[in-house]
Length: 514
Image 1: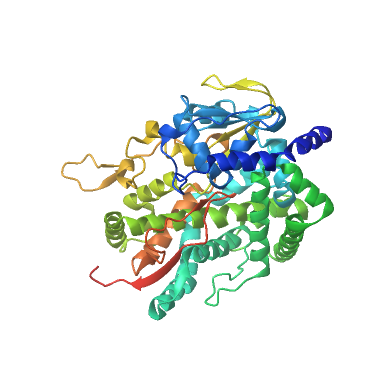
Image 2: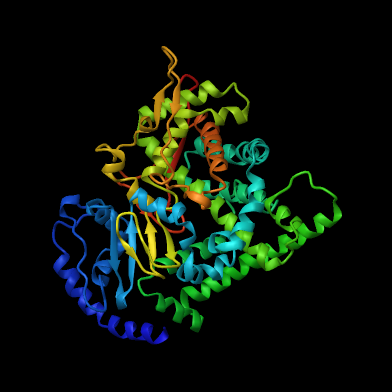
């Protein structure tokens, strides 16, 4: 295997010269930041040994959009990308294929050696980086944390406390002083505090008025960023050599991961001591559940908790960042959401967020266009044939792309580019009813929360948290993006998607009559 990688590297040494020639030919006055119309898109040319490497390089700054364009013009919304040295990868936006790999033939598609090896330094044997019995055990124990009683307690204690004691005061201060805030950063801090309380039973106090830079949070962010870069690397051998030599980004990753895990082990030791001192805890967090299940190995439990922090920190903050930007561009939708929030304000907190149908639909619509997890990759355990006839060989990667699926006209109609919550709603059947009824899509057409046996355990928790934040914030404030006129934020797909450069906003107190 090493010989093949070295051979590939030898040929790839020539690629910069070829790339310059290719890019020079491709560079014309037509080059724009916006995606080209589908009619001009064609599958990339493949060459011996290097496959479609030149086309990948030419589109590396817009790889996700480029792949989405290709899938839009592919007859079955599935395309086989030829990579270097004869390797191939299946890319798909076909719901039937998604159902096949996530449910029908679930056991044939796992994380695989590529994903596991790339993310092992950071995620270890956590739930998002393993298959089989270890995955099944972690999911079973964690599932107890997502029952109705736990969700209600989460909303009414953890989330509400963070909103009232930290988020609202920061927004009030910004409104009074005219300060521009990076709302993406604010939301990440908010979500980080929440998930640490749920996962560790520990409050990192990341959303304080001073917006502190805590060592744990910074190390975690560094670990996420560099691990994401590994996944997107055009030549994985490069980061492997850097790791071997302990230089550059790999040296920073080693230091960051070490800090994350050392801090986690400290919390685990303290939690073990707490469990020994008390026969039962008033608040049972995820860490307590795993330790009480008989698994006290610090390395294993650390991996588990890191995975859950990753899931809880970035997904909701990503979804809300893009949602608030879309809301600012669609005042009619904002008006409907605000009306619903005011109507529900007299209800108990849990019931309030649970019954916000229009807001729920608008969140689904936002995540259709800007999914927190833009792509997900599986690896074939054995040879297979996908429902559209695509042949998959053992060891091939199959990647389904929610970002592309949300942009397919065949799935969402000719108005797919519009932010339209009503596509998820219909009026209640009762005569003269003005109430909305939510009409969901199947999880394979809309795999934002995955589907099948690996469907996201925290889906309901995420919706409850997001709706509670929106109810708490929008009732009092208007969030106004402070971007330059005509500037469109850039969607950056990492483990979870982000808005490049953050979302600068001004906070405006709402008029009581608004």
